[in-house]
Image (cartoon, rainbow, N blue to C red):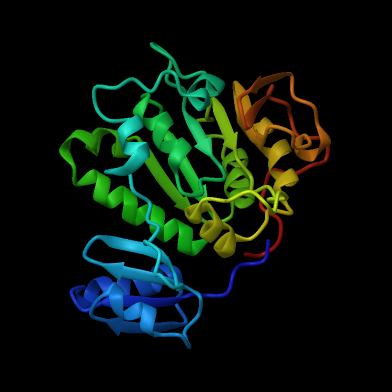
Length: 284
């Protein structure tokens, strides 16, 4: 996947200059503007249709439309995901947890190699799993870091955040480096949820996923993750797919868990093909 073009960063006047600079460096914004409030955004018809908006509540993706839609943030503190995983409520019934083998007395170490907006990783962490999140889009990685920082400030959520480690950058490179390091502890599970083209044009895609697709694009190299994931995981690889999607890399799993709209394909560990090198290829 080619990296997306840098977005404009628009920052509210209530944000400090230091925070503005941190956000600009994190996302590689090509232009930074200042506005007193989101209300002013709707008056900028000559601006791009997708921006990054930063205010005292954190960093967000913001579409410019009339009427102005709400910002899309990584939010582990409020909203539907927070309600499903709130303290005192068990997430044991979540299908992603079952697929990854998370249950009472079993909290596998998981690498989420396609972290995205971090929802599945958060569910796994609330179940007690240690989760490493890999995200190659600098914009989405910055949103994740912002969401994790806000959750860490909530005392009852701090322990969940402490079980999550964010690794910005390309997952193929991260998995190759992990395989090459014999001293590094292998994860029991590698979790993959690659972007899948949305083909039903009549269906209404949620705004957050629509904006997410606009930023990250497709995952034409997703197939390359599967052999690396199978070589790294000590117990299983879990691949989340739309219910009727073809198998990742054309490889049938040893088990499927099928839900209403999605399924989870489970693959056993498998060594890399003979001659394949786990070390990073190329210079960068």
